[in-house]
Length: 103
Image (tube, rainbow, N blue to C red; front, side, top):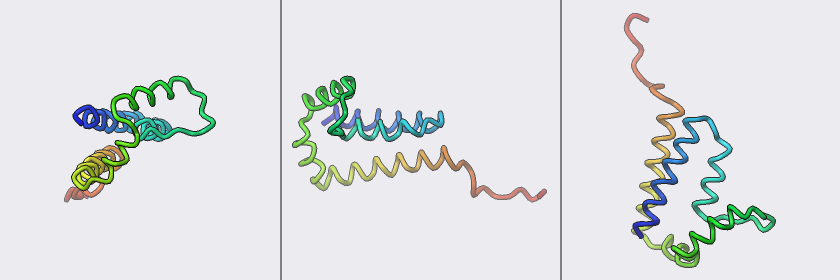
């Protein structure tokens, strides 16, 4: 769905933002929020509200079915590759650039 696609883009942007700002501990939280991971002992009402809202838009059982559909898998892989490339460019900028001849 368009909502899920925009959610993915927003999620990737958020991950890049926290990486640029060196807030690496937030990456796990963002991934868990996107994939609706719930720890059984989690009592965080804010997290539960986010999961409830996501569940209303796209129930988790439908999300699981979609994640098994080949076009969705390819799209997800492309999004992941784009995200990983962005992370590499942020974390390891121009490492392989040519050495100036003056050196």
